[in-house]
Length: 148
Image (cartoon, rainbow, N blue to C red; front, side, top):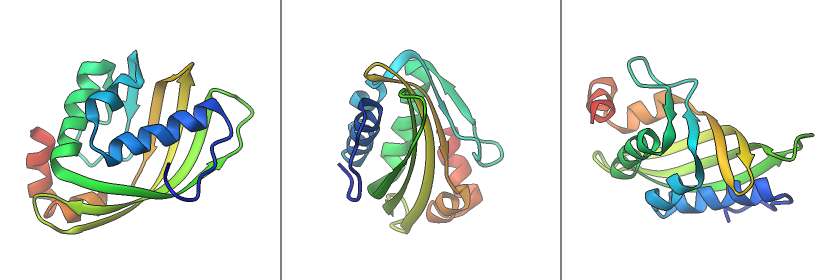
């Protein structure tokens, strides 16, 4: 589990587990955490990049690009209380490298995640696309990544 976190609920434990899988680039296992009709959403995706991915196939295609381009370690995980037991609101940092350029990445995230049992139903991830664009070598280089 990333440092700084003490998961109190099943939804928080699921969230911490998902970060562990991303750190290990265990993308197939990570995608399996989603319900078959699960949604992965990036409200601040750069212009021209898709912002919503639905279902295992779309989510896997997007996250394969993640694994090919970024290596991150997640720390400083903090959960914020929620009245709904199936809702996780988390803040954390990601630090690592853009693999194609070797440039450093340091990102702050806020994630809002709805769960269903031991799976993720909807993951809304707020991050700063300018950090990733710069690490990937600028907008034109990052656009190639987005196209795959």
